[in-house]
Image (cartoon, rainbow, N blue to C red; front, side, top):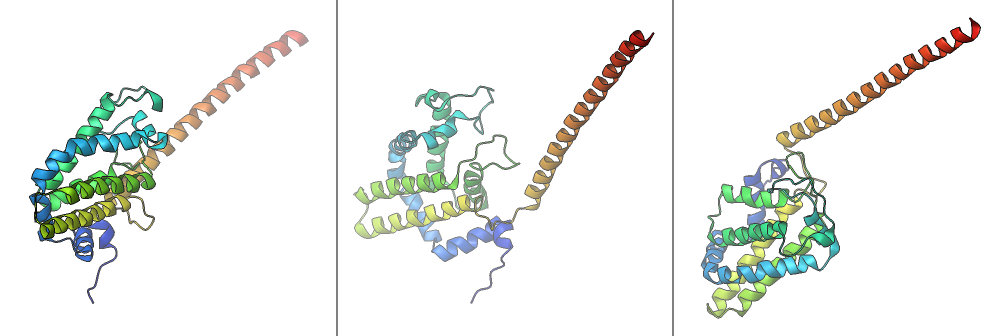
Length: 247
């Protein structure tokens, strides 16, 4: 029986990935098979990306996230209604580009700590944390559903490919299936309640809390000074009236 250090699963990305990939059985052979499929998947990327955003457009609850300020884009300060976000808008074009890069990285990038950090960022960027610039928080139910949809599209397309013999195609499909479960874990780690915050996150959250407390104190001081000023003015007015009345 192999001993697993509980806390390290939540504080050490490499350790967590080693555990998850080993448990699932996502091996270097699987990674090589995904790279081997690159020539086929690359041709499918535009179709997959368009299909993903058509699916997101199907539901107001998923499309509404694009009406908010987006991480990675310059803030405009303008709030939009969900219905105002067109499929050919700047924000959707930007997001399609990001998904295209994600899929291309999948079939070209070496599976190392740097790439794991990128996959971890993909999960992290959808949540509201003190380490993000935007306030977008996509609930896990939508992330899980979308990831499942992307996985189904990729796997479905690969199963129809005649590029490889049956055995190789089955191995490639299985490799992708394992990968999407690994990616799903890197979403879940930012949503599940048993996650242990890193020291950096704790410090950022403490700083944010302190900033809010300072802001509240400042507002309270402002209100106190205003009330005091009003009291002084009222006292002077009452005093003047009383002096005039009794003089």
